[in-house]
Length: 102
Image 1 (cartoon, rainbow, N blue to C red):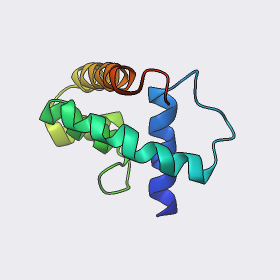
Image 2: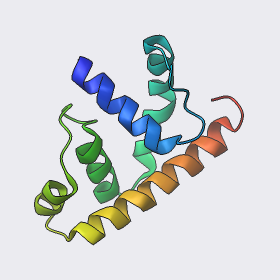
Image 3: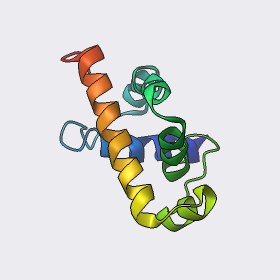
Image 4: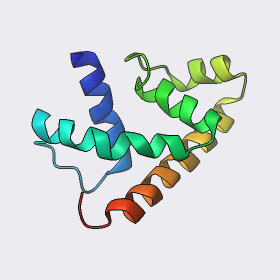
């Protein structure tokens, strides 16, 4: 469980690069999970799979960009493109849903 928590924190730092305080408590992190994770349902299946793989959100074990490329049978560049598009969609979803409430 602790491994998965740290992976979720890594994911949060990517989604909220400027807004996430360094001293985020476990309670605050737990409060963000039900707000952030539903955003994954608005991604294309491949984007969701890449995000889950890169940040260990599915099985708690993160994979490297190269490993994701092998898993999804695509180039590293395409994995990165899908990741970046997915992060943009997640940010847009969260901004729309929670504008000033996060």
